[in-house]
Image (cartoon, rainbow, N blue to C red):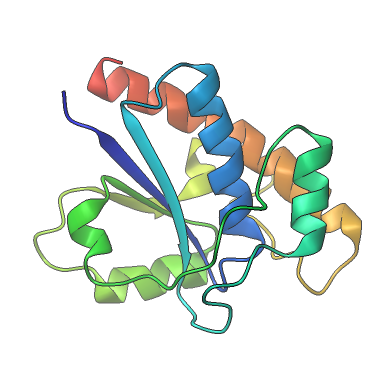
Amino acid sequence: MKKVNVLFVCLGNICRSPTAHGVFQHKVAEARLGDSILVDSAGTGAWHIGNAPDERAIAAASARGYELGALRARQTRAEDFDDFDYILAMDRQNLSDLQQSRPAGYGGQLDLFLNFGRHPDFAEVPDPYYGAVQGFELVLDLVEGAAEGLLADIRHKYSL
């Protein structure tokens, strides 16, 4: 059976994409699909390579039972288009950046993560970095809904 590989992408890979990574990884484990779905995250920027997620993201996620502390930021790379079936951006700017570097033969799904969500008021996951703690709670709310939709999509598409 083919493993389905999912990559979440934001700008610095310390707030939104590691939150999506941790939440989705948790949901995959709950569904007992860890052997079938690989989850990763990355940033289009290089500022935080090797750093743990933002402490506020870790704390907000931990309060809801998600573990982000072991994650480390990395930058997207050309090989991601070979390795991942889903490359999901947190916002339109990062999606645009990914579209510009996408090779012509990429057969996976490059999309906005919230297209799998159920929050009609949000097309993008807002960046909480320069805001208050409530921004990290909103990110979790949005990500949890989109993670459920993504998992349903993968289960349907790959008969898991």
